[in-house]
Length: 183
Image (cartoon, rainbow, N blue to C red; front, side, top):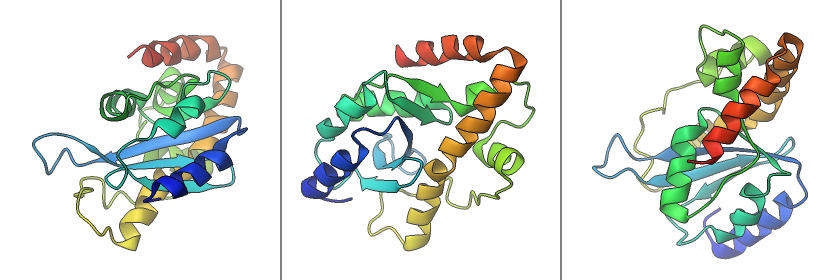
């Protein structure tokens, strides 16, 4: 998504979704000042990649991300929430953080790739983890990598949520999720 019109269409597609997974790619490893370069959003059926360098504003996403009735799934939400607030003034509510969930379950390896492999049996490549996300045009393999960071989050959330409930730790995790919203 590179235009305001495409963003409006995307926001319309996201309205009414009970769950949206979110991730950002930033250029912090290659720039003095960290900046969000991509924003990835996934529902249970669709994944969108927004080129934030092409758009001045993301205000249309505010009603979705700030609605506590919509669950917003992140992996390691702290950094992403801070960048979204700083760069775009976006507030996030309804957080479910898969990293925190994994920590409450006592997982020893709680990186996204490790959790996706354990809970979903899928291997994620982390080849572009430290790539220069500010360069343009981005090659297709980098866009695919970015999309994978949210594509599996809804299913991962389901597995972790079920395990938290079975362990009697869901309420503890939810307390931590609410703290992340107050960043």
